[in-house]
Image (cartoon, rainbow, N blue to C red):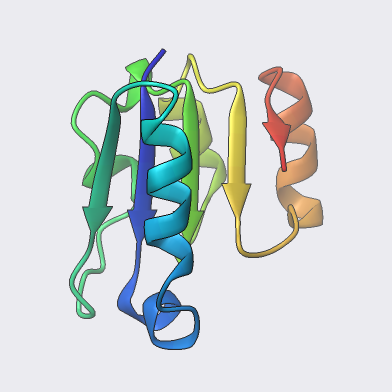
Length: 101
């Protein structure tokens, strides 16, 4: 299982301890990649990750998630964000067998 947490500074500005807490919880279950992106970062989520196809669970905090991102993450089964799954992505999530939590 490959677990990744990606955090934008906008999230940290509002919730300064939350990303670290998620990291602590997941690290107790095994290895976790933890990526804080720069405020000016504009690359799509899948381009921020090395080998996005191998990610199995992901937390994306104040990071936009798109259908191309999800399609690049063929093994992703669990995705958590700081927002609900947008209606335009619900079909993609279902089709790929993912769970947006």
